[in-house]
Amino acid sequence: MKSLLLTVVVIGAVLLTVVFISPFIFYYNTAPYAGSSLTYSPGMMSYNSGDMMIYYGHTVSVQSAMMEATANHPPYVTLIPSNDTVIINSSSVHITVYAMMSSMAVNVTGHSLPSYSSGDVFVIYGLINPTLIFNSGVQSVKLTITVVNLDNDMYHNFVITSISPPYQYMAYSMMESSTGYMMPYLPPTSGESAYTYTYSVQLHGPASLWYICTYPGHAEEGMYGELIVN
Image 1 (tube, rainbow, N blue to C red):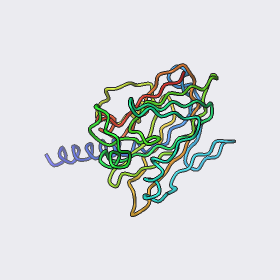
Image 2: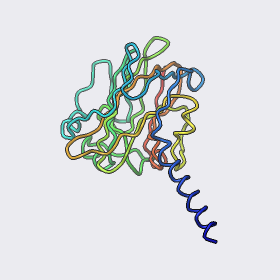
Image 3: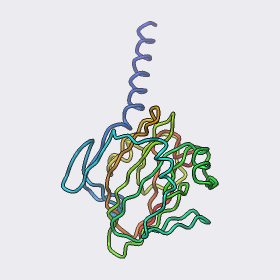
Image 4: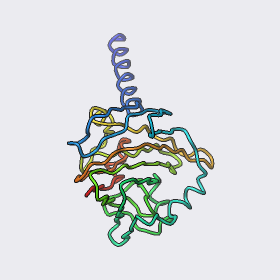
């Protein structure tokens, strides 16, 4: 009886370890993703490959990041707050994504949450979980993404996928790892500092994609948005 109980405990501990640790593994390859609609640059923590650099572990001031979340957008970006849409007319783009609690997002942006959202959200160019439309005029878009986690008690990441909602509770890390680069989770804020992460992807159009947080339950609760490449 004791040996059976010990076996159950050991198996349970192993399963919990796999579920918790697997999303933090850094995945990377150079194969086309989702039918050649997206290609990830190869890389891992602090890895330099030509003109592509991925940074992890940098921090910024929480207060300054909150102010920058609604700062003026570049001239090649058009915002349409009435339908929560961002139109980007460029073939080389650097966007900053702010992950935060829904109450903070409403206070910072002055906008309401999307109808499908009941949890944490992304703020991009001062809009909450906006639809991102890329009109590059060329075959592909080089997109550099800086993610800033402003949540004070939760881990977040920002992953582009061809999988559309609705999403299930579990993280999509192991499923995604066979097809593209998986961003690690950023820790919650520490005091007055927020963690950041920067990486680059190549978007190939036309494509209809989605950006999500793969932490268990987050995408299920509405931490996602649509990404369209024309």
